[in-house]
Image (tube, rainbow, N blue to C red; front, top):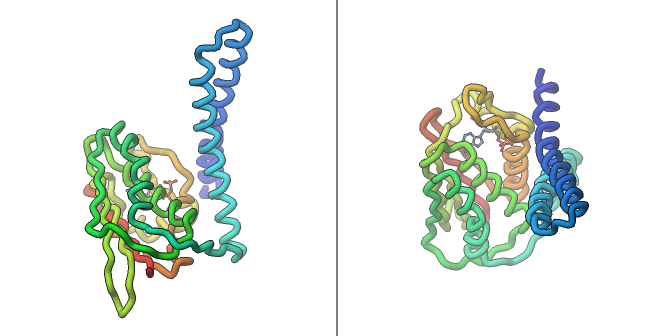
Length: 230
Ligand code: ADP
């Protein structure tokens, strides 16, 4: 049953963008035949966006395979992480606006130089924020809190991503970091995704010697907290 559900989900995630791309190439051909060039740019933009989505999905699956074989390494680089996080969150404002979600980022520090793996850090943040927006209904709230903290003689960066959306039951919380696991949301309208995102997030956070925790109440919302040593 699990295998079937997995194939259905994943093939669906591939088929949707492919259908759009196919539709757009058809439209471009027709436009060229009729010597109409005005809509082509828009079609190409849509093809671009959907191919990016497919590429992202494939890269996530390859990353999972790499982790399974124990070949995933950190590629560290020193960056000022605060402006970098702010930059990453910027691209979510329009997605949040579409759903009329109140999206805000709170941070009392302006600079924090640390070594990070830029690509993996980006994957962590974007997965958690896009989930928070995806699983929160219209006019909801998504809140991000960034702090520098000290615990057990260690300096850490703490990131909290909080939403007042669907929430996750205690039973499901035990499994959501498992690869391909998705909460059965059949009663709701949200049925997209692959169940890969959180599995990757957890693996990446642990590779950075950090930790991830979840606090959630069904129907009230969730808060994902990550701590990564500086
Ligand atoms: P995907 O989003 O592709 O389904 P993830 O691994 O990112 O996969 O998430 C696994 C499951 O955890 C989701 O299907 C969803 O049911 C649940 N989930 C994740 N984040 C949230 C959230 N912020 N609020 C409610 N449910 C969530």
